[in-house]
Image (cartoon, rainbow, N blue to C red; front, side):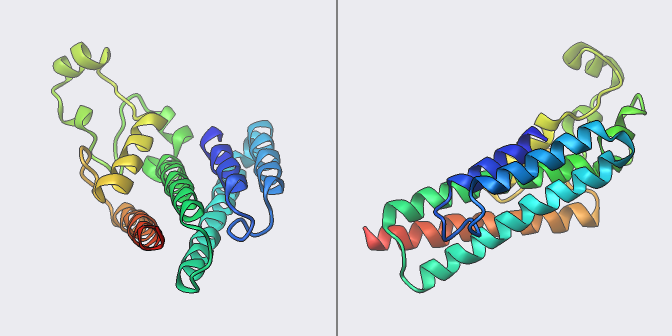
Length: 198
């Protein structure tokens, strides 16, 4: 939820033309949904998915508007670069949240099992023999934490590929291709246009 609130806050920092006019009201909506998700346990998953969907829609809207601004030659170079950096950061948090929410049934389902299994990603800890895992990780039954998904999302946005965890499932491959495409569009197009303006 903290990552989703960070995305909403980053959206509030975007120029008004990119933030759907929501500004800090978007942060309030996400905060209310996140709070309800924490308070109403039976609806936790639904409200969490709804919150993730809202910030994903904010990211998509901002990206489309940024591309429109680029094609119509609107915006100052520094404003475009700042917006690109914010969108790139939003992209990382949005997809890390989706990987965390969906992989191996989600965080609540994963926490019910002592050992991570059936997930979409083959984390390096899973390929270690149990005795090595016990020494390096501190326990045999390793579970990925949010930081593992954040690292995966960061690598996908930076290197356009998962650098340490092979992707095993089709849905994860599609999401990672989408994330890398957003990152490439944000960095390549915006950077090229901003440099051209400068």
